[in-house]
Length: 367
Ligand SMILES: Nc1ncnc2c1ncn2[C@@H]1O[C@H](COP(=O)(O)OP(=O)(O)OP(=O)(O)O)[C@@H](O)[C@H]1O
Ligand SMILES: [Mg+2]
Image (cartoon, rainbow, N blue to C red; front, side, top):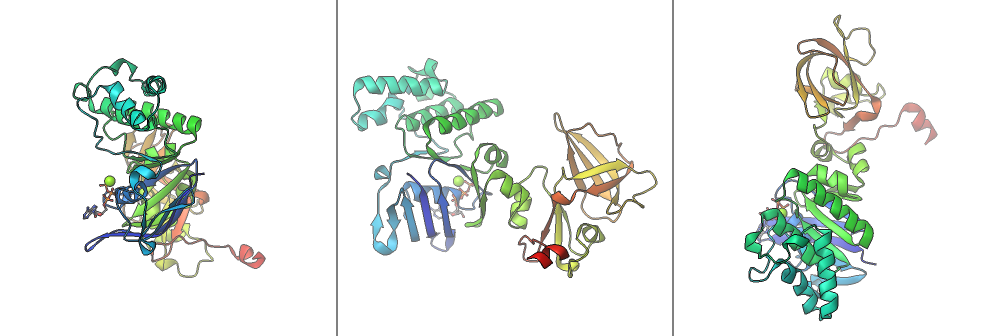
């Protein structure tokens, strides 16, 4: 078992609180993505798990063993944590060929020559770089070097693989292929993978668990669908989803129509509506007459390759509303439309940004 447990973990650099009181459990065998904007503490968190950085306070356990606890004066160095690392800047040995780079860690582990050769060949094949075996790093593209770095780390079959934006240098199609490769490796070796990215699509498609980090604190941890369908707060709702969630500002009439009538203080509440969670119908006579519908006018139709974004301006004003659809839109630019929100795509947030779970009067009676 190689669960990773973080307890009240903090890291500060002088005045900067890079990681603030993070407590979470990364399950053995999971594929966990740490997702968040630039500077939110992702790399710092990963470096602490790896043992490249000591915690300022709190505790890290890997597989039940305390590997970092400043209070107990305990710190297990990186090379004794059974953890493999691939960072965005991958330092390959320039004087060694690709094959020698991949085999190097195995010789440090005093593996036999036969096993080194076999394992190296396997890893090169898996990462589709067998034909590059005799080249030197300087003769490779950035994406090829990144794959050598992955092969070198995975050859050691670490229990835990920590990846800090390992696909950042690859073009879109290679990224897609490598993503599939990582998912395959995860399935076949059962390695616990912790993967840092600021690309939410990458996180959504790869992860069994997503940790959303902002300002050094965990905003939410859950499956891709949990963070999308039940965002814990405004930050998560805004950050996850492309096109982003539509936010109807507090007090606007638009928000009022989305908020159930039994909510007592609608003026202080913000409503969010996912772009796919609405029906848009041509309504030349205006939205009047359709219960819960919002009148709007189409301002742009944006094709996004197999799907479309319909941009609309509400008759009530405010920010444009975006609707994402896989069906070719039947409405035209400048056409008046009615937006009919689907209840399942409506999210409500309290003034402090936290998600509001509102029970209907009959749910309240039952509870
Ligand atoms: N060695 C250091 N000394 C001082 N401040 C640091 C150090 N390392 C990181 N920081 C600061 O800590 C914060 C978190 O940095 P970190 O590198 O963990 O962010 P990140 O989420 O990985 O960002 P990015 O997506 O840009 O890689 C930032 O404000 C950064 O400037
Ligand atoms: Mg980083």
